[in-house]
Image (cartoon, rainbow, N blue to C red; front, side, top):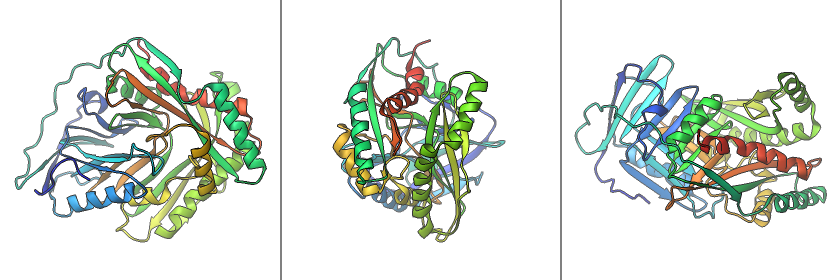
Length: 420
């Protein structure tokens, strides 16, 4: 469904502009939309139209709504890069039955940066192209003040027991891998300014994709997929070790991670699930023989970049996201058995954690990440946020170690909320 009428045609104008500075720093305090990595990407604000969806077809329904909206759009694009012209930002629940559902938001303004080019897109509804927009003057982001944290659905010991039960199921042959998540409640003294969180995440985790859509804020290291002019890329992460802060020790840990049979097994399940999901949509795919170690500020991951050539250019980036979700990296193997066990053991609704988040343009190109290292702002209380983290459980997993790993994955959001 749409929360705004769409009888009039969509109109958009994209113009080149001089370097405006950091994208995230130009966002207004309310309604921030963002997808930024290493300073490049998109930042949007305002709202022309919003599509909300729910249920098993929530992603496909959103894709159809967007296709119908842009089919007769009037566009003047003077730049011609992916992400120019009309753009929609979206995020979707992990589980089809979640009340969080999905959303696509078409902003009034989009500021973009790629390489040595910057652009500004103005979007509206009607028969007349909008005038080139102006960048707003925005106040500096404000601190949320003192932050307190409390257990979410389960305490640490309770979640450890859940991991132990999952291990028993795996060792009994019910499944090969399951990804279990936990949540943490954050309460702040003052309302959270999303820009306070986003700017800190982008500064500390430049290798991640910093995102903001409909109150979902985070910095994900995992790219579900990028579709650009017929080429598809997916970055798969599975297998994690915490950083110590000592470079020599971390290098030794990275080598240990790369040799770990437990982590390699977990990683191979995730890579295989992505490659199999992409295969029907591609004429060819390339899967490297071995993963590399991705070094982030707080943890290190085994990572593999899977690439493919699209067989059908009618398949949009959001359509591919629907085909890939949920991957073994955030659900498990076999998918149905893992999803059922998640529903049985986690004792919570994941909301849009571990679901697709990103953007798409009128040509179907776009980037969709997996919503990890993130939090969701409460709809009616800007002083409350749920933070999420998850771990892959396979034969050989240790429940205490998984609790420690989940704590490490909560660090980015905890630190980003903290006052100076």
